[in-house]
Image (tube, rainbow, N blue to C red; front, side, top):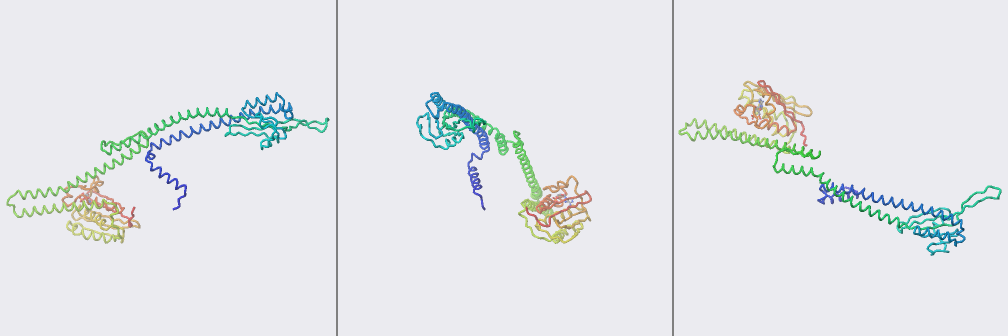
Length: 501
Ligand code: ADP
């Protein structure tokens, strides 16, 4: 796979950062974010203020010098200084200017010759710098050299002359550049002020950094506190100190975590309760036949000279109890198998008509024994993807119940139908029916409407639980309609093709 260089770099950086344990802490992250968010404007502001001051100070100084130089330029023309540099007034003025701005003043005439240099180095020399040449053409220049700490300016020395063809015509005024003033003024005083400003800003900045640091630590602590509280509450719940629901109402997020955990906890509690109930039911159900057997065996042991007929009767009772115990264990094993995941299903294309017919054939003797008519109606041939063993068990339980909980001369009708998506098996009987209040419980493990009657006819209370689990594993549904004394109809609906999720 092609990964762009930049993206790869970011992924690598993310991985590296993820490896640093302290950066994985939310507290550290909040602290760092607040610190950065606080520091950037602080540093930025200091830089912007200093830069702004420098620009303003240089521009004020430049315009100051420019004004002074323009006045001086006029004086130079008035005193014909470019022709004769001996004027004491002008020389004093030039010296005063150069000392005022702690700089150097050069007066250059129209031939680019230096007439006066306050440093006395370049006098009589010729200067051919770009700025001077530009200035001779009438253009003032100014340049700020930050590194060396000075402002360099050129100002043209202009003379206004009258132009006219003769004395009768109106004369025209014209500026003629006679020379150039080249001045370099020191910016040390600006720098000194900037140093002071920078130092003050630094002090303010250090105070601000300390303030931001303290605020960031406190804010990170305060923001994480609810999460620490919820972790503590979860730990307590896990260690079993409390069964109370968790409630940390400090912020919405922790409230949501608490609610979600409470929901999980109550679901787990429900599961635990139902498991405990199941275990106690299993123990009870398994114990009943054993207790009966013990009573029967004890009464045989304690009696002397028991007639052989009594022996036989008691032993056949014991055999019946063993059979019952065996049935409970078989049903429990089936139920456990049905409780497993769908991965345990052995799906194959099965002819459902053949499957139902086989069930009917196997159960017909029981129906005959109880004088119940067993009718099978198949609307159309049906082939579906099912687990043959599990579906047989589910349907057998329904038909067996319909026979077991029936009346004398009653009937059981099994009907198979299908559409393009599902097949339905309807098991209807003319039996005793199920009371309305029991309908919602019949799929519970070990639930029986009439305990003694169910026991009498060999029920374990696990049949419908097994049936329901098997149908759900096939992504199907089961419905029941019943009326006491009239009969019951179970309708099972299963998809023709098995959809694995
Ligand atoms: P059992 O092993 O007791 O039959 P089931 O789980 O198969 O257990 O059924 C639970 C209870 O539902 C039964 O004890 C019975 O009271 C009631 N029941 C199930 N099917 C029928 C039916 N067709 N007619 C009347 N009652 C039924």
